[in-house]
Image 1 (cartoon, rainbow over the protein chains, first blue to last red):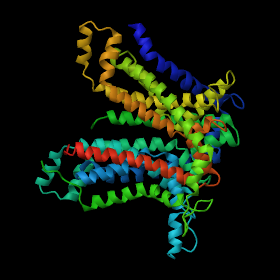
Image 2 (cartoon, each protein chain N blue to C red):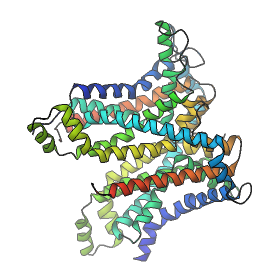
Image 3 (tube, helix red, strand yellow):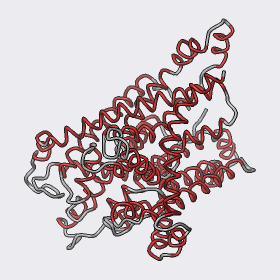
Image 4 (spheres, rainbow over the protein chains, first blue to last red):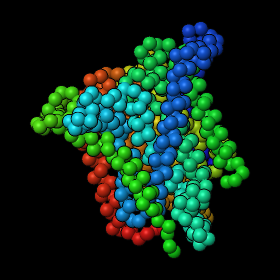
Length: 270
Length: 271
């Protein structure tokens, strides 16, 4: 039995330990040994105004993105789960097409739409609405739009499973007792999907924290987030110790969030 | 049973979200026909020069071929490792299964940038002892992609195994089937769709992987996404629009076929 255990479970675990776990410990070692042994890099990461500024901006952008993505995903999921067959097919396409398209293509799409010579600015100028192009990318606005676009499909899946689990009879009972559509929605349906909303919010927030490509392309260096800062500290103005320390802090933050999420999911009321 | 269908307000909001989701994908189309060398809308004159560039510039074909090779190697490796692991968890129900699952899913739940830095550390360390599986080589990228996509295969295969009736395996076992027969003749045939899905998904994930690839390549292992990144980062090259239109077209056609198929076959309301 032991032999099968090693043959089946062993390969993946050894593979990931060698390629991921041990190298990650190497990053941890960077963070406490470069340039000199000690916790200096962690102190720097948590006190240097440049780094803390980036951390605050990351948290602010991620919170904004989470709220907008979950709200937008809720609207389209509602139709996907509860609409008629045509509405369902259409909304499913609108969710799945962006989901399967690479993050680069999607970021490029937003550049095509929002940049100074892009679709919106060209039209607005031709129609005389704008005289100067409006800066919609290479700033925080562009980053938020691009991230929301990337994350909506991910928020849809937890919301959809929560909505599918709602017992139809409860809604019918509410209607039978005279509740209107609006009241059924806000006082019955939404409370019954709270678990899905929180799950979606946690997923989106965690994904958003480690985001690199979209902020780098749509922020154009003007709205650096934590992931891009790590990249800059490794490749552009090297300070490997600081890059390592920020990575460890990010990893710890996400581990805490997920633990909190699990604790919450197991807690009373579920 | 009467279903409470979404009303006009919900439909309108959902339609707005749908427009938001599709808008940037549509905006790419006119840009790809611009006659200029920079990102702009074609005014009057439309040109196919950027599509021609895709064919004439060998860098694109090289990038695509490299991404296919890397995707195949990474997805085969990841699916095989994940299949053995998921089978092990399902059949043996070992102690510490939770901790093992945690390690198996680590590259998926960790922030991508931390994974990227970790794999950069790993491959540059390997570069010191060999030149094949190393920083900025195709084998190195394939190995790193296998690490990143393996957790997705584990999730898919665990779900597939969860739907297999354990009594089938017990029946085979009680009739004297050895562990090899149980795996290859009984369990794997029952999860063949899961295996195919895992292979397909891991291939697509590797095919479009960019976060980790940026950290572990520079000038030699230029995958298709890496090539697109270079065209996006510095001076936005409208050839990116042309390749984007091609990639979006493939996804849209594939999903449309699937949707029409499912409307025809399973037109019944599952609700």
